[in-house]
Amino acid sequence: QVQVVESGGGLVHPGGSLRLSCAASGSIWSINVMAWYRQTPGNERELVASITSSGSTHYIDSVKGRFTISRDNGKNTAYLQMARLKTEDTAVYYCNADVYVSRQRFEARRGDPYWGQGTQVTVSS
Image (cartoon, rainbow, N blue to C red; front, side):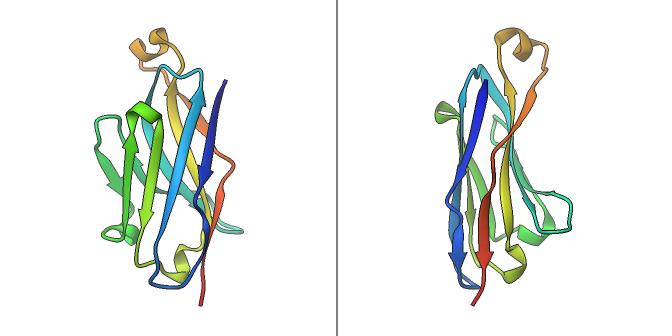
């Protein structure tokens, strides 16, 4: 089994910064893409940023220039550094890891998605 755990959420004033962490553990051969999503009440979960194992990144337009995603492959961990936070960034942030649980699955490029439990980020004055 694979576990994904997020941490680092909290309450911050507009213009402030937070750093989220996502740690994956368990039966992991390697991890393909790691990504951060967010969700607000009544809305669908949306992709915020993603990073491949080789370091290629993708961001939604609303966070470009403010958020930075990174990862440590040796620790199976991803980070989301959030700066110049806005009230509209308030959401529950979820980490998703596309995991290869065996060499065979890796060679077949068949990853399995695992989600964390989410961490609340509240931006408010």
